[in-house]
Amino acid sequence: MSETTSVSDQPTAEPTPESSPRHIRIFDTTLRDGEQSPGASMNLSEKLEVAAALSDMGVDVIEAGFPIASPGDFEAVRQIAQTVRGSTICGLARCNEKDIDRAWEALKVASSARIHVFLATSAIHRQFKLRMTTDEIVERAIAGVKRAAAYCDDVEFSPEDACRTEHDFLCRVVEAAIDAGATTINVPDTVGYATPGEVFDRFKMLCDRVPNMDKAVLSTHCHNDLGMAVANSMAAVAGGAGQIECTINGIGERAGNAALEEIVMAIKTRQDYFNLTTGIDSKRLVPVSRLVSKTTGISVQRNKAIVGRNAFAHESGIHQDGMLKERSTYEIMSPEEVGFSKTDLVLGKHSGRAALADRAKQLGFTLNGEQLQSVFDRFKVLADKKKEIYDGDIVALVQQQISGTSATQWTLLDYEVTSSRDKTPRVRVTLGHGDQEFTEQIEQGDGPIDAAFWAVEKITGIELVCKDFRVRSATLGRDAIGEVNIEVEHKGRSYRGVGVSTDSVESTILAILNAIDRIAAGQNDPSENELPQP
Ligand SMILES: CC(=O)SCCNC(=O)CCNC(=O)[C@H](O)C(C)(C)COP(=O)(O)OP(=O)(O)OC[C@H]1O[C@@H](n2cnc3c(N)ncnc32)[C@H](O)[C@@H]1OP(=O)(O)O
Ligand SMILES: CC(C)C(=O)C(=O)O
Image (cartoon, rainbow, N blue to C red; front, side, top):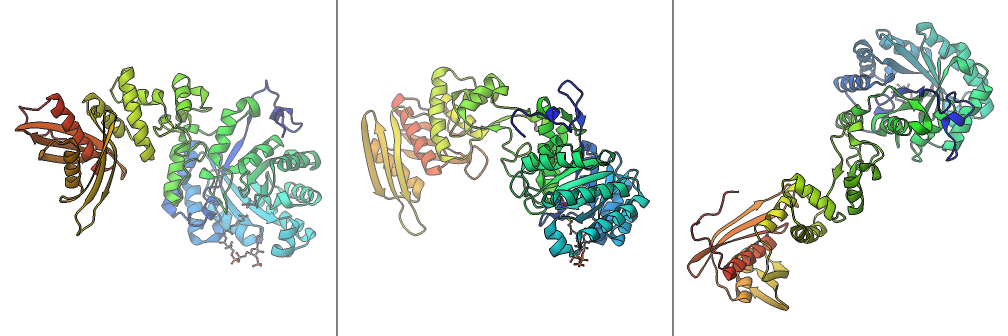
């Protein structure tokens, strides 16, 4: 498809841009092809739960399994057929009597059932796998479709590996299958080999050349081996397909299938371009994605379109600033539309002042320009050390700012600590005071914290008696900020100090410097002998 070609420009697609959108059937095969992902097997109750969720979301057809595959698959298809209403329930069968009979046995209790019969048609599959001639394939396809049609009037036929099948032969098989009673013709790209242009051409070719094509719905079933499954599915629709087969989270054999959530949101978001609709309630996409991920044990990659954790997360300052001014600058869909609760402006090393001020405000702190700059400077230093900055980190930084904890006289420039079980700790601390730098290296003390005290005392010349020392995690995670609160005595008076860092030695040094600043400023705490409870 060219950039400027819209569905409505295609000879096979009926709607004009002004006409009402064409409805596309969503055929979900999470429980069949999706379950073919190695390690994705689901048990009966899990399958029932997923099927109910798919139906609630508005899926037109649920391929519930391959009944001949195992007694468990049979039972799952049977119980889904028995309990799920609102969607057509489909079962897969090879093109032989026992598969088709078994499929019907499971499906017959459904209020709306479909038998899906498949037989490979490409030269590679004919020669090496099935070892059948073209005539035998056509005969077998006709017999299979007829047997299925004797059971039920909704029969889908798939010429497996259709996208690598010779055009003439594909047309011949498709025409024969429709004559035999197939109501849906699915044209799978079984090995994910086709490109969007080729898929479009193939579907258009079938619409143009198969004389009875109007008697069946064309369907697409694309695999993602080259990462083109969704693009190929959309190209198939432009070429005349009325049904898309897909799976939640794109799971499926090998690299998986076209992802349902991507298809649905492409259709919804680019309605101006495609002029299509589906019956899917898009707000269910994230919950159903999570259900399938939990059930199969296959996690969703963070950057997965639509349902990935980062799909609506913005980290860089320029984007966050744009988002705060007008969300359409960087969002083509709203997170709420797909079932996320909100956009996530993730604070990290690429964030700017606008996002930081916004988050601080949400957390209840309104910072003036000077405060914001100071918090921002320390935020950037912290962000260089931590992958993600949590709300608790921001609270800690802002509180540090508000309580005047930032060292105004003595600043910590560098430190290094070596400690081991049986040896005296070694610490090197470099402090700044005005334009000057002072370094002290000592091997002294009972552990690195004690050694840090000694080093700072030596540099500043201020003797301290530590009366209380508390460390607590101010935030969550292994890389959480540790907040150190100390109470020290100097010349008979008590002073407090607070320091925060992801490194507890650094928090300690910052807390000591904070106390020393208070000593210099005469800010003792005469009335309080106890540190506040965290
Ligand atoms: C493209 C797809 O995703 S197709 C669906 C793939 N899914 C699965 O295969 C999952 C479920 N499969 C199974 O549990 C098993 O493969 C079963 C139960 C279906 C069959 O098991 P077995 O009888 O042991 O056969 P096996 O799997 O080893 O080989 C497949 C046989 O089916 C034949 N076959 C393959 N496709 C078809 C078809 N569409 N119609 C008829 N026969 C077919 C093969 O030629 C082979 O026959 P052969 O043994 O005479 O050579
Ligand atoms: C059974 C068919 C539709 C299939 O799964 C495929 O070709 O990938």
